[in-house]
Image 1 (cartoon, chains in turn brown, red):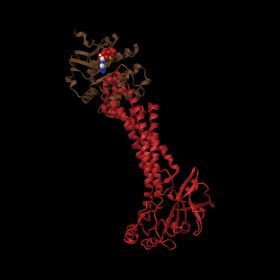
Image 2 (cartoon, helix red, strand yellow):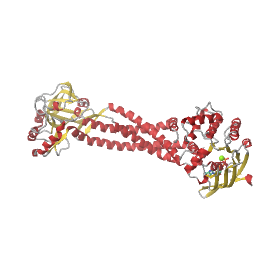
Image 3 (cartoon, chains in turn green, purple):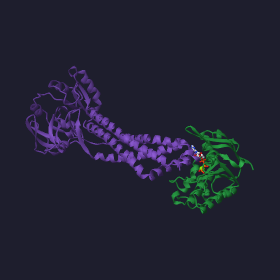
Image 4 (cartoon, protein in one colour):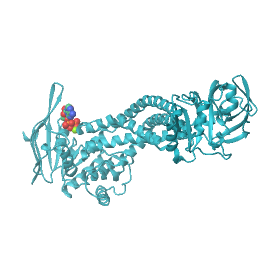
Length: 226
Length: 388
Ligand SMILES: Nc1ncnc2c1ncn2[C@@H]1O[C@H](COP(=O)(O)OP(=O)(O)OP(=O)(O)O)[C@@H](O)[C@H]1O
Ligand SMILES: [Mg+2]
């Protein structure tokens, strides 16, 4: 499998006044194109931090993250924002939909950063919402949807720009078993059918089962490599 | 592309109560601001409409108003001989020597000053805007008066047949006139000869007002006036310009005082807007983090929040102006510093006032929204996302 993400000697330290908290210690990971990777580990072990670094919304203290051969740790803020908008799809535990926008408008949001015209955007949004099975809920507001439906809208928003990589931080953490299963099936389908590389943080062993590989973090160390 | 405007509009709608409180604050300040400007403009408009474009007024140079000016009989005779003075329908020079004084009259809540203008028979020809609405014009040679509509409205016992005491003698009201809201409406008019006798002023009037045969000849008239060495202590002004100058100090005083007060009020409204926007930013921290994750820039976050604040302010401003515009139906009166007498006027609105009020509102919105918007834009994405 061709590597798509290469994390090398990654460190993240938070300074709280005098104290230094080492959140990630010399992490090395290679993720292959089309892989479905699950990140597990106890609370506070650094899963979210690692995911955020790979997704380019945080900066490491040291180390490199190469995505498709480009080291994103060298990017400036606006370059990184532009890179995210075309390469990363985000799925959050609490969906993070914009409450004042409809399902359609939420999914359209990332497309406003592209050069697509209105008609093209409509086409993309409609097909993304159809993929997640919500073609009939486009004009619904988030509060008119169930949690599972909200998360599906969020997934549609993550895939609408057709990014290579989807990062999902506990995507089923706030859902009941049935909805969680639906979401996991959807992610699996995105991975298999649409060839998305997925990195998913989860506490749920059922969720991890769907992944092609599981990595464990403990106090900032990747324990599988030991 | 920026964050869609709908995001701003919907958030504005959704946060009704907080937005409305801020909005009302801004609307109130803008209302006061606009009202003050409307008052100053109303005074200006009233006094400017008092003058006619083809009339000129002659005063003593040292005088800063009509009552402090004196023109003796000899000088009056010299002025009569100047060229370019129009003729009345009777063939006399269209020129009115006017003795202006101030008397005390009773109104609700005490005494106040009223201008008494003693005029030549030609005065009505010079001011065709004067319409008698009740009674008849005074008889020259009798102690009779006509009063402006505002005088009748504002002072007590001002009916036809009522008597007014001037320098120890009773004068009878014979008529009431209207000039469509000019400063004359706040005056009492009498016959010049009769009044000068009563006041023991000989034949010295305060000012001379005359109509030119053609407005085009104003410069020529001024040149002839300046060329006459007997007139060096006197000056010529367009009547409109003169009355406009008479409004300046009062209008300026009202503007300065009013703007000073509204600026103080505006601090309150601005802080209100700031609190609203800080709350708004705090409530939407996760949304901000989410949008930044998707790739929206700090600048577009700043713009979205600033725009929201401006939207609240602009709406407040429009509401304030809307209510202020009803003030146009109100007429009030105040003492004009220049004439020392009451001047009755209506609040008046013009496009400049609307524009400055809206700019004022927008400035409040900008100042109130700026710091909160900067806070929104400066958040680190990971911290914003964590705040859920
Ligand atoms: N901005 C920050 N400042 C200081 N410390 C932080 C910050 N963000 C995270 N940390 C610390 O880093 C450590 C790892 O946090 P992280 O959120 O990555 O853990 P996690 O594995 O995702 O935990 P959970 O399963 O509870 O989500 C924690 O000890 C946390 O307190
Ligand atoms: Mg986490």
